[in-house]
Length: 96
Image 1 (cartoon, rainbow, N blue to C red):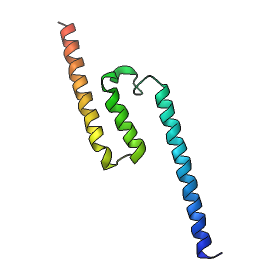
Image 2 (image 1 turned 135 degrees about the horizontal axis):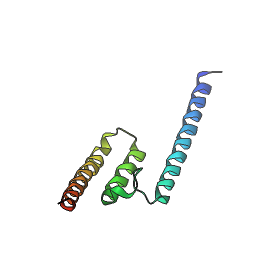
Image 3 (image 1 turned 90 degrees about the vertical axis):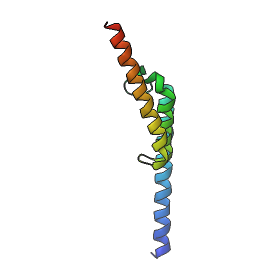
Image 4 (image 1 turned 180 degrees about the horizontal axis):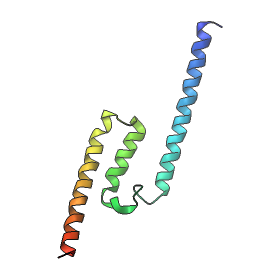
């Protein structure tokens, strides 16, 4: 066995792994589209649904911890803060 045979084996394993990972990402994407809930907490984040999906799509495409996805995640976090403030204001108005 020479060095080129080893290189071909490594390339084949890498290609198989990439195909497997793409299949898993596609399956996750399909499952997320089939469910109506935007998160594991149900429809509570309906106000931020678009931001949440954009952030998740970015993570799927570029991987967790990617600097490319920081902006979409920051937008999602700001939306959640706004949603929380609105919910607290609504709850305090109901309790008066």
